[in-house]
Every structure is written in C-alpha cells, then in structure tokens.
Image (cartoon, rainbow, N blue to C red; front, side):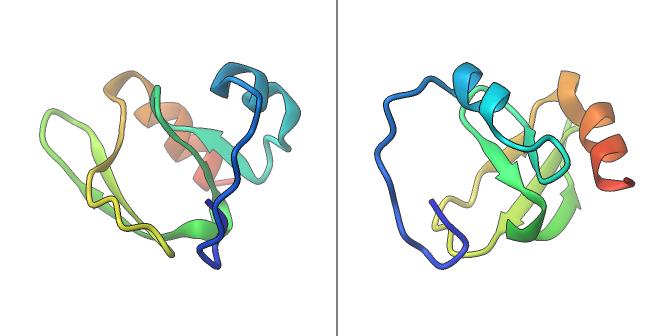
Length: 79
C-alpha cells in the first residue's frame, strides 16, 4: 500500500521485495511488512520490548516491529 492509500498486487515475496527496494527508505519490520520511512506517523513502545507503528493510510492497527528486528529498525530510523 502506498502513502496515499493505493494498493498494488505484486508477484514477489517479501524476501524478494526486500532485496529490490532501497534500504535507505524501506525496512522489513516483521514477516508481514516492509515499511517506508515516509509512511511512519508514530512509533509507540509495546509489550515484550517490541514497537508498534502508526502508518499513514493504513487501517491495520497492529503493525508491530518483531522483537528480533527492533534494534535494526531503530538503527535504520537514526540514519
């Protein structure tokens, strides 16, 4: 889904997409999501040392950064 709410169907797995996108702008946060730095509205502390993200144009309220990806996500945000 794009920042303006458009949805696209792709013939790639998330592993393949992760290799194709610019790592400066996109980060894999769990098995379900690759997020753009421009799409993040808020980052909230969550249970078990995880983070919850609020994304622009997303109706999913449970966008959680996986525990094993929290540190790499924080490093990515700090760039």
